[in-house]
Amino acid sequence: MSDYSKIFTDEHLPAYGRSDNPDPEAHTKSGNPPGGGNMETRIINLERDMTDVKVALGKVETRLESIEKTMLTKGQTAVYALIAGMAVFAGGWWVVQQYLAPLVAGLPK
Image (cartoon, rainbow, N blue to C red; front, side, top):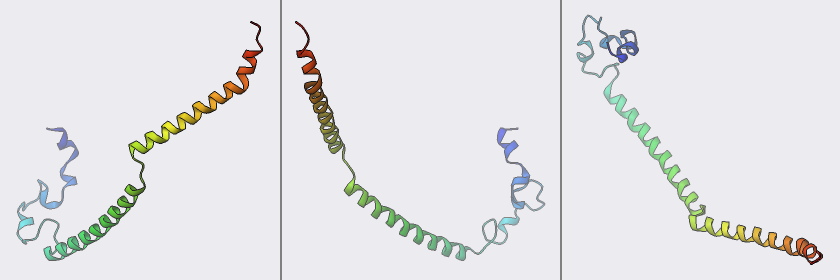
């Protein structure tokens, strides 16, 4: 007995798939797929849903295009990081000149 047989027992299957079903061919006699229902109605519903999916996908594509227009590139990010690093270095240099240089100059030789 495999591990799947413990998970998928007859109680999880519809009547036409169970081993205790007296007529295992019952699901094919009506000509409709298992679970019943009219095929044309099911196809119409699927086509309607696909139209909704296409509309939603179009909205997503439009949103992605606007995001791509305003998105930073790797090059822009590198330039901004370089400018920020230069500003931090310049600020540190200014602190050294303003505060440490007079202290060092006042030390005895």
